[in-house]
Length: 391
Image (tube, rainbow, N blue to C red):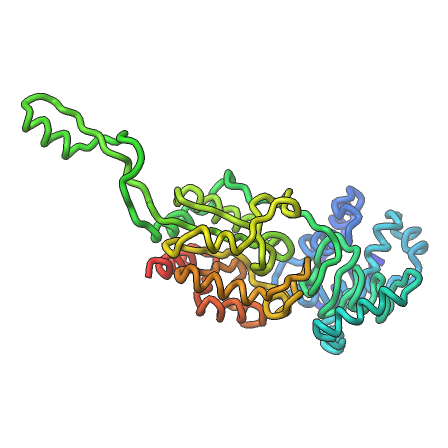
């Protein structure tokens, strides 16, 4: 199987060498793919593809090679790797042309069809196009491929096209102690400044000391409160799912913001803002804060920054019940409009490259809701966002 994969890559004019193939085999022997087809995909792509122009060719060959496993026992015998690992390799990967041919049901019809399947299905299915199963083109199940479906029983996303996830997922808090990385991110945040003197008298007032000493004829040391950035900031951070690819960049921004803004409150959300948010991802199911309480508690003088890739199904923004994780009574669009009304000085910072934004319908919707105040997660983009927040 792996030799066929190697040969198919060569035939597709991906310049892979026998040395790179042997490196891949040694990596598999060391179980670096951790029996996961997702990890094997990333591992093999990292070892075999040296030029980003060949990534599309690699994806096509990977799909054609590992979507048609017929006999797992024969593959195990030849490859001498665990059967469960090869079973995961049988997951379905469609080409872009195949995905385009599959019908999108629409949100309401999708959910109604899921209810029918749950009522009718009596046994496990694999590789089909109708039932809840694995490795097929049905819109329901795991490790298959469909442009718009409900993910059930799969540990993580692969293409970001699910409109619902029927599994409990755990997210990780961003670390405020993370090393800043590029210093210019913090410098860019300094564009948003409004200084005031506050706190205890602990800073030397040199001018005051000189005047007092001259007036009194002896040294009279005067102190004053430290001059601090008095801007109030609310930071909303998208976490989990496709944002896993941008954790490092988001943590750098989060850490820089905590150092730059003394009056900073942060909250987490997933994909789109709904009726509640949270501050601790490990306890996000038990400890949530109603979004309306935040709207009531923080005044219009706050600046609001959303950080997220805005990549989701449009249903998650414009459809009641469209959240990927729960049945939200009101749309995400409604809540984002309330944010814009409560805090006119708000921006959305996007970690994906701006040239990709036009290809995502959800990104275009979010950008419109924020009156085109969407900026890239780069030093220049952050600086532009800070300028927008000062107006």
